[in-house]
Each structure stands twice: as C-alpha cells, then as structure tokens.
Amino acid sequence: MKTIISLLGLALCMNLTVQAQGFDNITIEATKLTDKIYVLTGAGGNIGVSVGDDGVFIIDDQFAPLTAKIEAKLKTLSDKPIKYVVNTHFHGDHTGGNANMHNLGATIIAHDNVRERLANEPQRNGTLAPKEALPVITYNDRMSIHMNGEKVAIVHVDNAHTDGDSMLYFLDSNVLHTGDTYFRGWYPYIDLKSGGSVDGYIAAVKQGLMLIDDNTKIIPGHGGTESNKVEYLAYLEMLEGLKKIISGEIEKGRTEDEVANDTSLTKTYDDQGYSWQFITSEKIRRTFYKSLKQ
Image 1 (cartoon, rainbow, N blue to C red):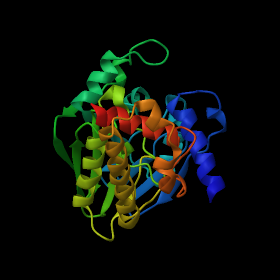
Image 2 (tube, rainbow, N blue to C red):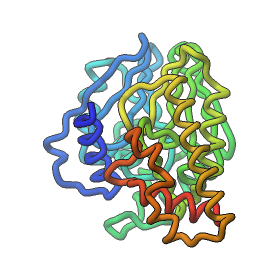
Image 3 (cartoon, rainbow, N blue to C red):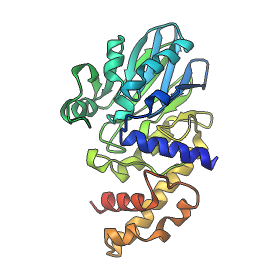
C-alpha cells in the first residue's frame, strides 16, 4: 500500500509541475462507483463522470495530451457525446484538456475566478490559455445541473486550495467530488499564491461534510479514487490539529524557519503517512505558518 501511495505521490509531483513527458505511457482507468457515476484516473486530478440518456458530464479533464485517451475511455462507458465539463479549479492538471473538450462539443463550466485566472495568467509555456479553454458558463457562489435523471449541486468554497474551488454533489447517487479541497491520505497543497488559505481549506472540508451522510462515496482530488465520511473526518481532524499546533508556535513568537525546521510539530501526522514528495512535512509546516501568520 505504501508503495502505491508513493507512486501516486510521485505522479502528482510530476502533474503539479506540469512535466509533459511520459504522457504516451499513461493509461486511463475507469472505476465504477454507481450505475451512473465513474472515476477516471491517469495523470492529474481525478475525473468524475456521469453517464446516462442525456449524455456524458465530466468533472475536470487532466492534461491536453491525454484528451484522446480520455475520450476513448469515455466511449467504453457511453455512446453519448460529452456535453459538459466542470472545472473544480484552474490548475493545469484539472483544466489542461479544456480546449480539446470544447472542440469535441463540450460546454466548459467553472467559477468566475477560474475563468479569470485562465484568461489572464500565462501558462507554463508563457502564453495565455486559448479562448477555447475558457469556461463559457461561470458562477460566483453555486449552481445546479440537472442531467441523467438527477440534480448535481455545484458549490463554491472560498479561498481553500485556490480562490476558485468548487465541489460537486450528486444528490440521487450520493457522490461528492471535492476537487483539490481533499487530498486523501496526504497533506494538502494549499496554493497561497492563488488565493488558498488554511482557514478556507478547513471551512471547505466542513462544508463538504454538511452535504454528505455515512453512505456517501467521496471522490478526492488526488489520493485514490474513492473515500468515505470516516476518512474525511480524519482528514479534518489532521487539518485542525495542525492549525492548533502551528498557531501555538506563532503565539510563542517563533519564526517561520524555526517552525519549518521543527520536525516534532508534525510527527503525529508524519507517522500516519501524510507527508509525501510534493508536500513534505517541512512544506506543510511552512504553508500553515505563512497562512496563519497573515
């Protein structure tokens, strides 16, 4: 199990630094959660999929070089067209396929801030995202999609992983897609430079818990294809525990470097395996310090 987690962590490190090499070797896998809902994995954030008579609706679309493989896998699940793509936030491992999905006929939907960042912040190649990659339907708080026989609630959570995060809840299927407001089994990546914050991240998890029950199937942004309320509660406990510890160190007047270098502060959670290649224990201490100090 630890080997699998390590490999997943390594894959995510590559995704978050958007290293394009190796996509030819990526296989898109599908995991069935309910009669209507699937999860696709490959390289990037978990893709949620709804299939039914109305068509195919997906949550996030990973990287552009993977679109053909994603489309091929979707065709094994449904012969219907891809009608909608909802981006949970703006990072490239969740939005990289937007332009391709647009060209396949899909309508791109996201929070207002996702469109703003995609339209105005240069990508890693130094250019802005093409017009085709931009969401054409945006919202500032929440919206609903009625498709494939059920209502899907899209809920914006403020300043969590970024400033444009959304989670999606399938009411009849009882499935929650959290985007990157939940890294199952790992310390979270809180993108402070893009509006993320510790307090907002904790609030997002609490909001997600308000939507679900003991039987809900949870699709995390990363860290496996499926989670549950018990694991989600443990994740919240870790976040709140870290906040209490780091806040206490700030009150003592300790500096960022002192906190970042004190391995004892996160030992309880390090021992549980939360530290990984991209977000190490040192990095999570530094992130919490910077966010809470503000």
